[in-house]
Amino acid sequence: MAYEAVFDLTQKAQNEAKAERKLQTPFSEPDADAETMAVEDLPERLRQGVEALGWPALMPVQSEAIPYILDGRDLIVQSRTGSGKTGAFLLPLLEKLDAREKTTQALVLCPTRELASQIHAEFERMNAGLPEKERLNAIPVYGGVGYGPQIEAFEKGAQLVVGTPGRVLDHLSRGTLRLDNLRTIILDEADEMLSMGFFPDMIRVRRFLPKERDSYMFSATMPYQVQRIGQEFLTDPVFIATAGGAIHVDRMAHRAYQVQPMDKDRTLATLIEWENPTAAIIFANTRREVEYLATFLNNYGYNAAGISSDLTQKAREKTMKRLRDGELRFLVATDVAARGIDVEDLSHVFQYDIPQDREYYVHRSGRTARAGKAGVSIAIVTASDAPTLREIARKYDIPLEEREMPTDAEMASRVGQRLTNLLEDRLRGRSNMERERQARFVAVARQLVEEGEPEVLAMLLDQAYQNSLDRAPAGPAMDRSESEYDVQQREAREARESGDDRRGRRRRDEDDERPRSRRRSRTEDPDERPDEAHADARDDVSAPADADRHPARDDARQPDDADRQRAERSADADAEAPKKKRRRRKKKSSAKTDEQPADQD
Image 1 (cartoon, helix red, strand yellow):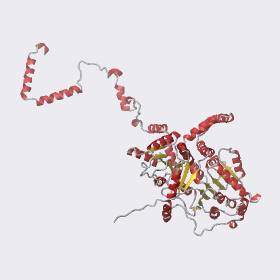
Image 2: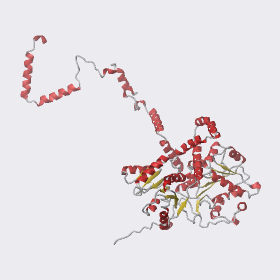
Image 3: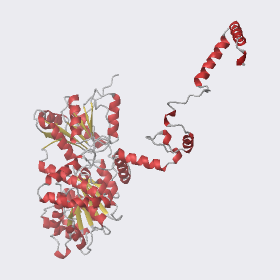
Image 4: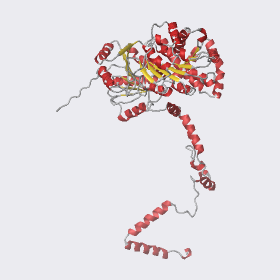
């Protein structure tokens, strides 16, 4: 009897199969009997804030999240931008914070200064609805501006601080901001904070937080690494997803950008810079394209390598090991060469070319979003490719989102914020001696800006940014249970990759700790080793340096090894000769002795 296996590759069939499986998450699902809130159910202070904002009703994310926040239950909310999530966590603060207590009671961490300003502005609008004596003080805190006004606001008693992790950490380290009386911490757009490279700063900020607190996290997407942040900051949180009522942990996002054919390579570099993926595979249709893109990305500053069908198995395995070990960030491959690739931590797939076999689009996208993780598949298409991609999306029921490329201003803002975070992080790590050295150039920097020559500083900033492109944004590892351990491992790996100079210094330090009798230099002459026995033997040698090349000729020369070997060979030959031949030699020898003169005796 013959059996036939049928595989349904449509997105609809995959979603149905996922719905049948029980989703495993580290968080609690919403209570079955949980009630939502309407405006009329809110406490008086919250209703005053809603009236000040002019909301006719609460949005779904607000009506679901506010009861948990007022109840003091830690909460994780997955909700898209524009869904009203900012109001969901700001509105309850009107009730939770005490205006009479002039200390920081709530902290909101967000990825950009623009978002910090928006959150602060919305809070001030709802805060204006309270009686003047009951109003709260709030301050936005971010880099790129002076410390003075921020410190002054802390001293006056800002109950709410909204800021980026880097600048908040600066104030905590300086002691200008204290969180001893903190009651609430909110992580907004946690996925973006990971993308911006804020994870190490977030972990350092956590060390200043009191153990007894309410913690909330909001994110548009919920990849596995964002879940790990929730485990780090929250205690037994409830997980609410407002997109259709389902927890979209393993949701795959499909995006398409249409560009001119000659702009595809630059578009790829721009999208990589915008998305800032931890690791990604870039698919091309030909070996020539693979070689070109790998070279192009390396020249651009990214850590990339290509594999195609003509690569030897040994070279292929070496490249794949680098990718799995996190030493390689971007892999460029053809469909044939990518068969069998299974890397868990891929966050993105870039489709530089639309596959000739349409089914391969599904296989390519499936390289990410594995094992309950979220992923992004990005297709770069031309005007002639766009109809084919739309047909693939219809055939496999793929929710394809066609987007416009980021503008130059948007890219400059995103890259500038990322670079500011990078430089501030480096500044915090400088020693006192390094800070004293750099103080000499503060006046030079001011002079360059005042005299209208910022290009020199821009050159240095570009160099610092380009040097950071080969490293993925720091984040919690996928298979660890403690992210502090993750940070230690990352710092150790960075130390190993920092160069041969540091490794050489470490070797020399180890050599200095070894006993003198065991130490040996690789460059010294063997006769100069500090070995006592060897030194004594050297002291006994009194012949000049060229004595070995011109030995003295003595009248009574001592037999050397060659003489002994010749004697042994002669003895062997004599033992094998016939007896008659030996007697004949003896007779001849005796005759010669008898004929010698008497004066020689």
